[in-house]
Length: 284
Image (cartoon, rainbow, N blue to C red; front, side, top):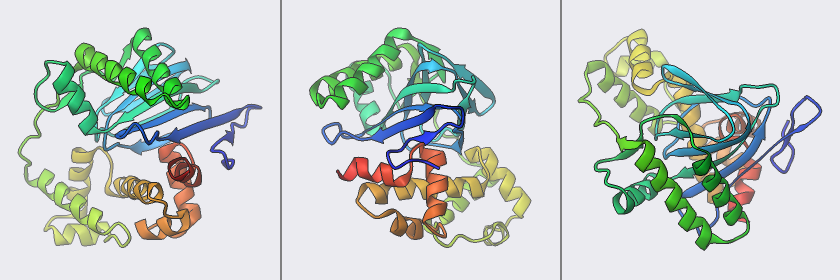
């Protein structure tokens, strides 16, 4: 059970804590600073990028085809829509300072400060870069002190550093085959019906395929089965509603959760803070 301030007991005599927030003078950037011990992030993906500096302990990140272990001085780099999990890789858990820059912000920095062409991305999911990690923690410190000018300048330096040293153009999406095309149409249908989704069988029948074939194609295309993707999509939509000031109980119903406790459970697991704490940081 999380506390009202977004922290939770870690069950080992200490406390987990987290702050997930946005400085209104830094558009296109979300920030998370946290210490987790027992918390486990289920498979999920982000609309934008993840740039995280681990400051103590070990974070274990589950990525498609690999698991990375990130310790102090390392920087985790995850591109948009890459499914991943995260959990503690050591008994003491891990602490980190995370930046979630929007795609437009990263594209702007890439165009202005690097020679990258096309859609910018990171070529490695984890690098050892103490100086880059220090920059990320300085961005957090400046933002928390209300110094948006310094935070914005440091942010652009940090993003440019990561792109220059560990960046490249994201590969173009291949023309989808029959299975991938069905998966993309299924995703669009689910997105349109978050609050009232069809069953897997209904979805497959409507797309002229079998449930098993659709399940396999969806996993191949998005790295998770449809029901996991649906939960992630509901949480993403809830984040938008909460940021606009919608009360958690109303947001829960709007995105298709049966009640607020269901939203609380899934939101906290995926985002890392309860929906009430998330909303307060954006409507204060």
